[in-house]
Image 1 (cartoon, rainbow, N blue to C red):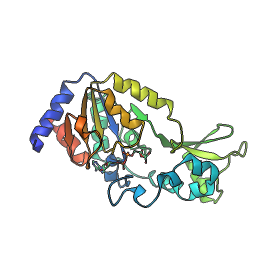
Image 2 (cartoon, rainbow, N blue to C red; image 1 turned 30 degrees about the horizontal axis):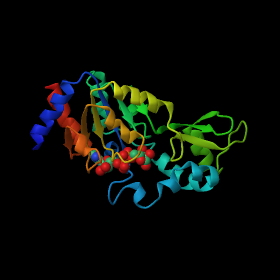
Image 3 (cartoon, rainbow, N blue to C red; image 1 turned 120 degrees about the vertical axis):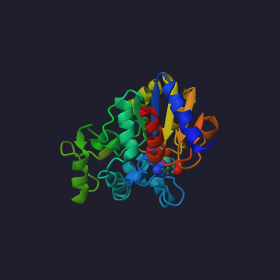
Length: 247
Ligand code: APR
């Protein structure tokens, strides 16, 4: 199906859906300058093992390693700005076209772009906590301690190990994932944008809806199930969809 028909089919599906949820992955933030994880040739996991970089095993057993490798990935995301794709999703939410955004991203760009109903199923890089007493600290406090070479960073109250509130490999899924599952179950359309859909349990979400649209630069294991697959950049696809819906 050439492009024009794809856009028509997508906008038709959106207009005929009572409730639309969006699921985003790292691919929506590459146009903000944040590398994704699995893009061939440039994804972060090309030259490092995620289990070595962002896992609880390394955090708890080799905290120095965690804070010298994995933590850098987290702090590198913090000064990125939303791109057009994030802003369009925020407009779509304001106009009631989509109910909310489930994101695997921890870059806070959906919120920075004005999205309100955001389900951060892999945590965030705004807050950290002490694994001993549970005290919350801002991510800036973590960064400060790491920059002052206090590695691993310790809780000022009890001396326990501080960690970012990001869902690491080895962590249980946060409660917000259960909320996201509930919202998808009561939706009739899920639009996936910029995710390889290879990491579970988030990649089970497309199984829960009757209609699925995938906007992704490369193939995903769910392309077979999608009503429409747009092999396009997120900003280009969303701009085209939004223009038709607004006209
Ligand atoms: N527009 C559309 N798609 C894009 C763009 C773009 N501008 N840039 C990259 N992509 C696609 C890539 O082709 C890739 O298939 O986005 C996808 C990103 O996939 P991943 O890098 O695997 O990211 P994601 O799916 O979010 O990873 C899930 O894995 O490492 C863990 O916890 C981490 O949340 C992450 C999870």
